Image 1 (tube, one colour):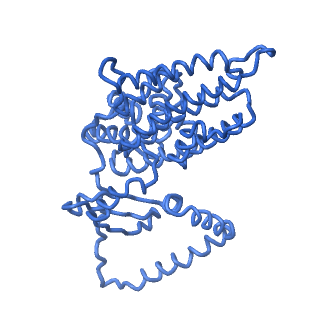
Image 2 (cartoon, one colour; image 1 turned 90 degrees about the horizontal axis):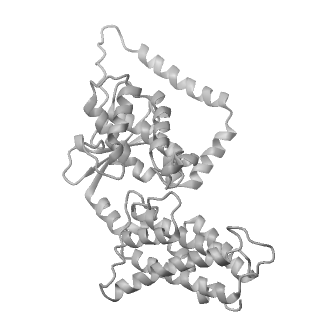
Image 3 (tube, one colour; image 1 turned 180 degrees about the horizontal axis):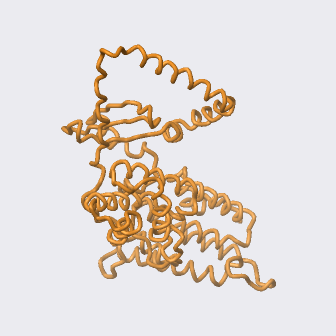
Length: 386
């Protein structure tokens, strides 16, 4: 094939540039471009896979409802994406309806071409003719047309802030509004070893502040990856015994300071630690997993709290908030990826502190993780996987 892939089908490259951090999409493009140049036999399969990857990316970025089938066809994925973008295939409603109908037919044609000429996915007789450059060009141009339509429509949509993986710079107008309208208060919780940041928005009082408790590892990992690595290297250089010795003098100094207080002096009673803000807990939830509220509530009450419903209202708020958090934590195959599982565990610990439900503690994490894997899309239940 004489002409470069980007010349005859520029939408593939445009999709990669639209989501530069999408590693799977970048790898698909590299494989597709190499196969195209070498006239490889897997061209059709790679083209179809690339189109479906674009569809899934848009669905996840917009927080749209995925197809009902656990193994949707390309046509079903495209229909779901067009619906999420506000482009419905309504016959007889004018030129746009005809264009959308044509793209649906292109998706169906791609499936048929792949089934007839794709030599990799289904397995073929060894004497089957290799795909011709004419068929390859038709297939590439069809997919290019569909991808171009998706990208054009997507750029006019606002991604779902709870599910998007767009970089923060994408929301500069929202960032500026938050930075200008919020006040910050921060302190270090030495006992737990976390940075406590309180954010007050607008006319909120200190009691209404949103409280974030961030351990050093999360702060470094998300804000400065090089600093995260540097800290790991520094810790490797200090043996555990030396680190313990560094801590001991501090304890001894505190003990000596305590001895200075005479018997005649009365020690002021320690102030009670402020309770964590509970404003992050939701009184009601109507999101994607609203049909699971009752099941999760019953699980917490009967399996984790041994039937004790004395804290029923607080348990319900905890359940509402956890399911809302899972909307952006339950990415594709989240239960098979260690970083995603770790993020869910961190969220559970944070919600335990916020809810302050007697009986919910770190021993409750794994039973809850098991329930979420079985009940939330992307877990071990393949029938519900996204």
